[in-house]
Amino acid sequence: MTHVVWIFSLPRSGTSVTAYACAAPWNHAIADEVLGPWDRTGEPYNYPQLQRQLCAEYMSSGCRLTPNVVSIANELFAMLDTGTGVVISKHPHLRPSPDEFRRAFPEHRAIWLMRNPLPRVNSLIARGWTRDLRPNFEIERFRDFARIWIRQPERMVFETMRKDRAAYFRSILTHWGLDFTEEHVRAAAGYTRSNYHANSKEQSEQSSAAPVSEKHWHLPDHAVRMYHDDSEVRSYMKLCGYPTKPWRYRYEQNMTEARLQRLFKLKDLPSGMVPDQYVPDDALDAVSVTDVTA
Image (tube, rainbow, N blue to C red):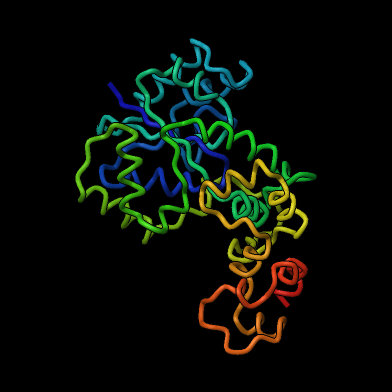
């Protein structure tokens, strides 16, 4: 029997690199959004024709895990199995709910993956995936996911991977109930150092052939403030250890020491030091993205 494990998240939350890194030590199969909304029977996925049927059935059911959807999904997972006995299902969507998922697939295991919402939305903008952003820059969608995430014992924070890759993958593999060794953990961590997942091969909505760099900060000031002015959102960000002052995003993404010194007439700013002990918060909050990127 194929052991299926899942990653639930919002789009641009690190699901691709997490899934493929976890699969790499064993060459486990990846089921990349097989429930839909896309038909992935063609290039570059080349999934079995059954995936088209699964996608159509799931979407026509209102994104519910009906008995027929579950039956088709289990059949597809067995077909995708490369012989290792494990399939990793990557599903960056709000539905199904955790309760519905556990009722439909009682033998499956899952994690719920959180990423800092501001870099996440910035990543969507950088790739031109802007259809659902305005006028609220997905704050309601983040709030909905965070309310799900906070209640799950199998919750993970993507940014912890940067702090301790081994601990990150060790926790995920443990949540999934997979047998592993420290060699497997090192292999997963090593994968992230040598592979970059820009996306899951979905096409950008922007017409330009040249992608916008995610390293540049594209999120406008009012969107940053919208998130930070929402007390519920801010509480989730604090819990995850994310910065909760708007100026920190400008500093970390755009401010060089030279720009800080020019903006605030600072002298001898220690290398790598954030400026909160040198400049009052209200002065920093008054700085616009135009100022720091000029």
